[in-house]
Length: 312
Ligand SMILES: NC(=O)c1ccc[n+]([C@@H]2O[C@H](COP(=O)([O-])OP(=O)(O)OC[C@H]3O[C@@H](n4cnc5c(N)ncnc54)[C@H](OP(=O)(O)O)[C@@H]3O)[C@@H](O)[C@H]2O)c1
Image (cartoon, rainbow, N blue to C red; front, side, top):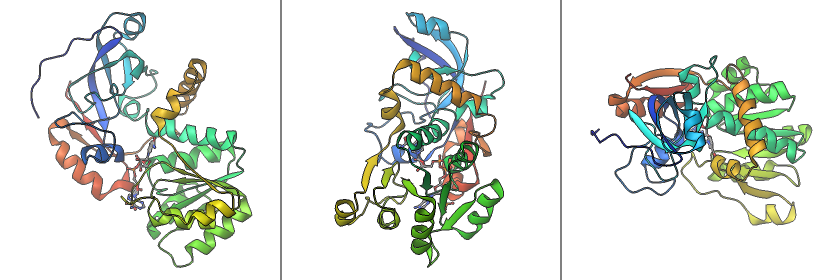
C-alpha cells in the first residue's frame, strides 16, 4: 500500500471515491500475470462501486457528477482496490436507489456475463445449456436466470456437497465431474435436453470431456481457465461432428454492441440485481487486509464473494 497524489480527471474522465470492490477470479489471474498485460506495480480491482467526486470536461462526466455508481477501471489503468479511482465516464453506471453499494460493486462482471450467456443462448437458438464451475457466483446467477427464462441448464460441479447446495437453490440438473459416471451421464442428459451450448470456465481436460459429450453441432464457449491448463480437445470431434469452440470476454462482447442495446441491457441487469443477479457476500475486509482477503477467497471460492470495504 502506498499514498499517491489524488489524480485530476481529464476530459471525458471522472474521479470515483471508492466504497466497495470484490475479489474475482480475474483479479487473481491479473495479479499472477496470467490475464491482460500489465506492468507492475499496478492497482488491482476490475470492478467496484463508489461516488463520483470530480468530473473532467464533457457532458457525460457532468451528468455523472455526485452519482453513486458501479465502476470499472479504464483500459490498462489502475483499478478499484483503492480509496479513489480515475476512470472514463463511460466506465461508470449510476446505481438505482434500491441497489446497495455492496451489490452495486459486483454488478459489472458476473451479472452482465450471466445475462450475456442467456442472450447468446437465445441468439443461437439453443434449447438448453451446460455450465461448469457451477457453484460460482456466476453459476448461481445462471441457475436463477435460466429458471426464470425457462431454459434448461445442466450444472457441473466437482464436489458432492455442491450438488445438494445447488439443488436447494433450485437447480434441476447437477452433475459431479469427480464421479466415475460423469461423462456418460452428461452425454445422456445433453442429448435428452438437446443442450447444445456448453459454457466452459475450467478448460484443460474437462473441455475435451464436454466436447465429447456434446450433441452434434454444439458450441463450446471458453470463458475462463480455472484449471490453469490450456483447452484440450481432439480435432476430430470438431471436424466430424460439426462442433465449434468460441471465446467469450465480457468487455469485448459488450464493446461491439450498439448504444441502444447497451442501455437496454444495463437496465435489464439493474432490474434483476436484487434477486436473480445478486451475489452472496461471505466476508468483508478493509482494504489494508487485501492479502488476507485473497487467501480467504482462494480457500473458499464457492462460499460467496469476498468484498473489500473502503473507508469513508
Ligand atoms: N470471460 C468473462 O468475461 C468472464 C466474466 C465473468 C466471470 N468469468 C469467469 O467465470 C468464473 C466464475 O466467476 P465467479 O466470480 O462467479 O467465481 P467465484 O464465485 O469466485 O467461484 C469460483 C468457482 O470456481 C470453482 N473452481 C475453481 N477452480 C476450479 C477448477 N480447477 N475446476 C473446477 N472448478 C473450479 C470453485 O469451486 P470449488 O469450490 O470446487 O473450488 C468456485 O465454485 C471465473 O472463472 C471467472 O473468471 C469470466
